[in-house]
Length: 399
Image 1 (cartoon, rainbow, N blue to C red):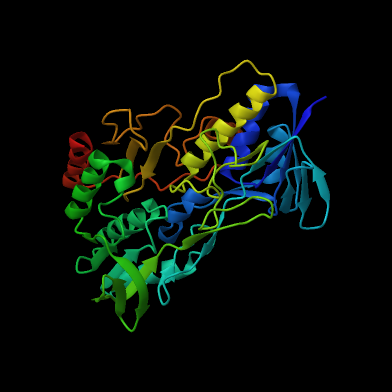
Image 2: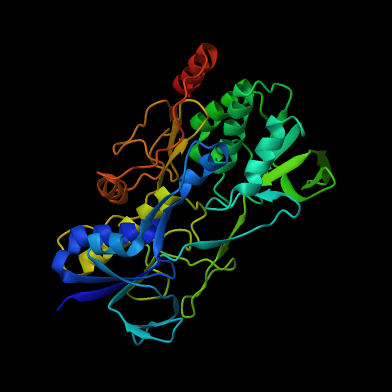
């Protein structure tokens, strides 16, 4: 008989887990996906929407599930009984399972009162208003910030760079753009080489960076920050804070996220795995979520008798930075033992193309789905001016 694998969630980690289990376990596993949403939104493209250079790609989750060899149930899992191997949905339906992969993601909560929040999905109208006011010269000083180092910071840098490019093309030269970040270096998670290259790019583009500073609230033209100070701006755009989604039966850590071991098995739980933003791993990013899903799927497949040696989680962070001109590609291992791995380049140092989410199975899967359809691309590669294009290449090479 097939083992029943219940996958909770409808995002990157959930789909990646289903794809890898399908490929590894084949007929040994029956896959069921439980998600409150019936669509899958390719979220990273949202950063281009305020500039009219990208649109969200949305897929029918049921159709994707079928192509993954899974059955979709549009319902939430709200509790798990490990001893009975039974999950319960919001609608009160009992769902037996042999293995469970919890990949429900995280919620988003605005945490900088008074600031305009970039939610990273459909609602970007408020951000568009701020960009429009800068272009019309109704305001001059804008800041881009995020509540804490726990957030994925790359969209904050993209918003600042895309705004500078938009203003430059519009002939607006007297605006002041500032990044206010709790980080101790720009995009420091990627390592020193990539971070130093991004810092030089921001300096070249005239974007000020204030490091080690946490925003508290924006009121009457002043951004209150910690350490105790206030900064003058006309507008502030902030990323939201991530908040966990909890399920009864899965013991969270002190912040509400789920702890997992090196094979992404939930601590003190048998046959229950977790992947993605719902876990306590501090980096919340699509590529990392996919890698966790890969590890969990391999562990389940090995337990089902597939002759593989399941990998332990050894995350490598890959990111595509939209700059308003040519994109840059950042990479670095997050754990030790790999030597100096931090790179910044004008071409991706990985296989699998140039898309925003780099995943073992999902990247090529979505590319196949897109074949024959009108595909919404990322920001168009507008040709940079000769100096800016040359300098950006130099920054990448020197990193």
